[in-house]
Length: 380
Image 1: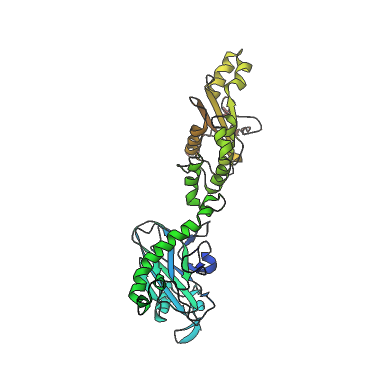
Image 2: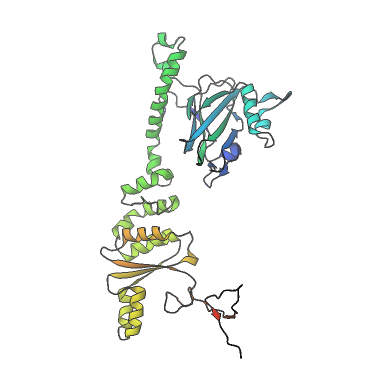
């Protein structure tokens, strides 16, 4: 709970940027954030009006959430008025009607806000708003990239009503204490951020509510190493829930199958040496072929994954990392990603990835090449 006032409220656009405003030249991400791609130099975002339902509302603070701000120039404009209307090009019009109009140039919208008395800040992502007063609130962000990088904009958070630690000081310091109020406001913001983090600590420890960025760290507490980002956020939440089961079975076929199933979205086939050795030991040719496919001794095993049934795009390197972490010690393996096949001496399995080649007649000239299933027929 906040030290100053438990009624401190917030207006957030995070994860709801499209619903709460209008962007220009940004691309929307799956999580609701916006990305200014590397090929765009400048981007804009305008919030629609936020109604606090109280005249002459005094505001506390605004924060801009985003990534890759090193080579980016940010210009933030904020405006608060008791009326949702303003004068634009000689007409009295709703401010939202101007800001949410896609036909109006973004630079003209910024000029409109400044004419109405908006305050502008450059490269400030955390600003005290104690000077701002009005029932309705608007914010606009202009992003200018100095380098060919991408900027990710997560959203805006506005705190209100105004709160100040000055009220805790002796009365003599509270009179005409504008400078002291702003000075203390710096430390007040830092203190409240720490206090808020402590208040929200249970949410970080709950696997359902913890932020995606905290998942790998939380997983390390229970012995799950995802340093190479093998699992995505949704998969990682499931893995952490099953941490006890996974760790207790580490080095076993069962644990490896479960993890591979989670990563790929399909059940893998793990073939160990003893599965096939006894059945082919009397046939030397077949044994040589099987050793080529599945390994030469008991230290080898083969992991086979049907790519056509995978629910996600697979990375061969990440699959190797996953197997290396959870395979039995001192063992070796083959990793096979099944593709359509018509060669019986390869990993070609009936009713799984095999197909019958369709042979076609071909001719050799300057415009044609022979495919693998071409048949040459000698003329009479």
